[in-house]
Figure 1 (tube, helix red, strand yellow):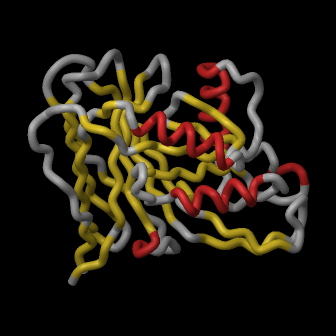
Figure 2: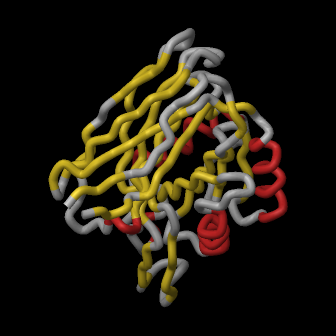
Length: 244
């Protein structure tokens, strides 16, 4: 069986509008997070503007009665990096970051939609991707991006997301609740530096899959982020569709 991601090949290398990358830093141990998780579910894959969602579960709530099964110290460190870049003080949940440029409370619906509208008006670098399942446990991805308009040194990242996912939480602030999550980041890869001037960026990472993941609920996300400011310069995503 072949797993295929439909993708547009890069055409004329010019900047285009959108999509907008949305990162939610959340935790199943946080009683304030479920409304933000619900908002992320609404935004995931929406088209006005096009939203690429990443649910990044932090681990600093894990010592308070419930260990979030989706949590990672890597996402806590990424959130700390944003705190330094954006100057918003300490980290908190639920925190939502739009295109690496603005942060806000993840459940503040009005502020989130204003930030999305503003981000959608920013020109983006074209990014294209494709992938195929070369074995039951390995996905081969190809990425191409026109980086002629990159303003400075940048890095490329790949995330595999899965959703919706549910957890029944027996302890902690959400004890007794069934929580539903969208776009849970299952795997995160740093693809390395991107040329700052001229030409195209290309990469062909191989991604290992866990047998417990469900490909029909998964997406692959690739984005390019300016190293100093954290601004997202371009992004693309595609759902994993099964084909015989």
